[in-house]
Length: 342
Image 1 (cartoon, helix red, strand yellow):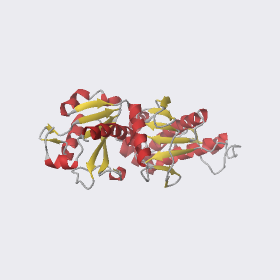
Image 2 (cartoon, one colour):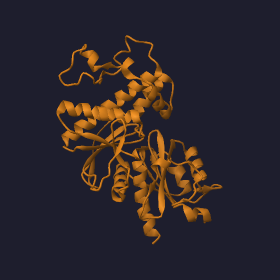
Image 3 (cartoon, rainbow, N blue to C red):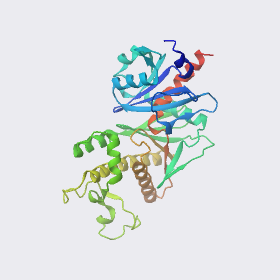
Image 4 (cartoon, one colour):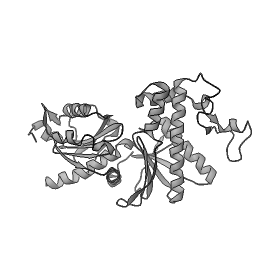
């Protein structure tokens, strides 16, 4: 490792990567008030009150070239020489770039489910304010003083994994589904030609699924279903109007696909919360991105299923939703770093 004064004074020499099917999520730490040369996700920054460093986050489409460019911009790599001691990597894509990344530092691979466990362990241990929240036409943060366990975690990336956490050390993957962000992106690209996830999410803000989906009150032809309020307009058949309406705009199509994906994931999650008798269900993953339409759809789905089954279950969300894996890798790495420097 190079002895760069600016680096050694401000940046901790470990980089944590969660390489998924579509995106690479990066987590690293810098001393408090250290001026960075890159635009990290400031709204996700964590300041640990017991330490003098802050945790920063950034993401980009999977690309080794882009990753190296970002590391150069931050200061981890200067003139082709690396200041990185160790990469802690996780995610299904961590095998793809293993050899290339090893040219810039040692590599420790973390099982992706262990990385999620470590991420929650870190968040739960520091009780960071404004981390967990509910959503109903707006964010309401939870100020938790007790442990968040037990809970079910629905991690939505290109695919979906559902895990049950009994405590900070005991967890198991209990289910999953292929109907995730990859399907939403693929079908949206097929309909619109657009392959940028952020652009598609922006389109959902202007779209309405009423022109594409067959709604419940339309199925009942104006008669109120015995299980629902007549003012509620839930989806009965996704894309149920495409046969009779061929002039649907792209925004409406993308909104319908978002609802189709999110409602199905929410129902699977709800059923598992019943099966395992755990009321608290957290949703995470870069598919969500604290996107209001996605949050609202999950909340509406849980509200609907709760009424049908006379349950009282609510979805919970995480400010750092797409970065739990890289955050967990950071937690694992920082323990070793502290041991080696004390």
